[in-house]
Length: 110
Image (tube, rainbow, N blue to C red):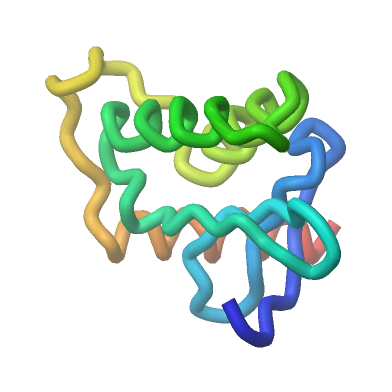
């Protein structure tokens, strides 16, 4: 993703970061300027979030801390989904963008 500028991260995210502006990504720098991006607009349901967790866990660079950081980042940005996979109400794109904006405002004003 050209011009990616990380803006918000937490120690519990183990290197995962969310970008600036209208970016709806959670990203991890894997090596020498290469980033792995997760489109949060594709994380509207528990099943979609779980799929990303499994995909990342299968990467050769994904340590247990990296996977834990992804889980923590998804939780902080999108909130914990209470319903079981397949039975939850999916987040819409405007809901996801609203949650990201609120999180960034909290982090950047602290």
